[in-house]
Image (cartoon, rainbow, N blue to C red; front, top):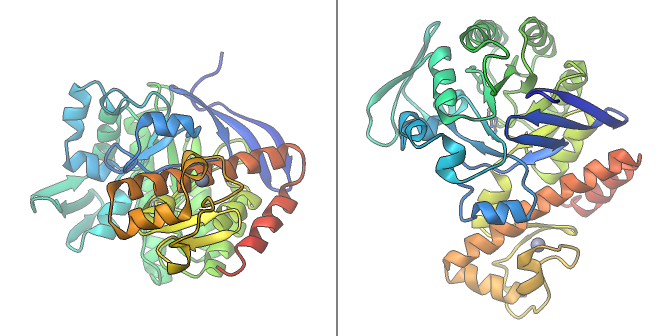
Length: 372
Ligand SMILES: CNc1nc2cc(C(N)=O)ccc2[nH]1
Ligand SMILES: [Zn+2]
């Protein structure tokens, strides 16, 4: 009988791991990409669409759902799974990143962070305990601790003081919801900015706390790809090998491959869904922008190697027309394809790790995406 938080590794290929993570709403095959459902929906797609493309888990944003419709309202509706009719696993972030990245005015203290609602300007306060209570109300399968994601360029002294507070907050989160007190599991978040010694310090402090998994935070905050990969390869292999490693807010198809090569198991990013809405589409041959005039009378599918509904039923010419006409169906068909592409890439990655061909798969996509 498996328990939420069980993490079984089936195969490795270098640092890459092929594993299964158990949650209260089912098992997750890793490496995995999590479509972002900010307000309890992956924009323009239905749960059926997501099930069809084998999305195993989606991400919900605590900050947004707390402000609207309210975590207490969602709890009264039976929790986010019932409210959104999503029967598979959900990971919720703590809201910290949104508060630190979306809010100009906020007050940070040892107790927590005060901020104003972007909806009506009302004042709110997240303590570590409050952030966990909200996620308990939402009923997510994987909860994230409240942390401070320091901005790109933060000096070493500030970054050090911040990671120490993030560790104290992490301990408060775990004490507020002890391991095994319910079906929800909790991940700690490694911070430390772009200082390798501080990254190790953050990890060593968090390792003392009994989390079911560990995330790498504080990346994809404006740094160069080289800077991100440098930190990634430094810290990921040092994270507990018997627990899932989650890289937050990352990334492009090449970032996912690089992350897996560093030993990362889980990813989330708004890129595929957000880019879909501005016409940037990911294909096996690289990125294309559907609004380009060259596609106006192109009767070929978006990606001949893609098996998704969009590629099987529509031409580039029609997808360009929908985009130029600002038709709602453009969002839906483009998002369907981009997320299908990301999820299929992760399926290929899982198979490649199983048969020891991950390096070849990574090289194939690096060649296709070389032009950026
Ligand atoms: C899009 N970039 C991104 N960086 C992130 C960092 C965090 C974090 N908690 O440090 C969370 C979400 C993030 N998304
Ligand atoms: Zn497709």
